Length: 114
Image (cartoon, rainbow, N blue to C red; front, side):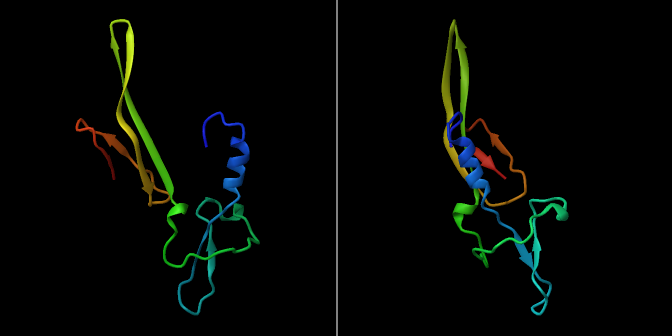
């Protein structure tokens, strides 16, 4: 999606219509319990959801968030402002849901994520 795109609101609503949640049980004979990490208040979580698909051991790559950064530097030389790319189109897949990620640009020109 691009900023200012006419269909941005419709695209966002379509993307938000998919919803994932987690189920757990304490033992093999216990009932599965729904957990909704997107809601701090469990009472606000949706109910009566229809399960369309299960992911048993791992999520598919397309369900993880991706982050793309493009870093530029601006230099003023006389009356001219010159913009030069430092890091162009660096992209990473975020495989740690619900945790913040930090990115640091170092003098070597490398981006590091931890």
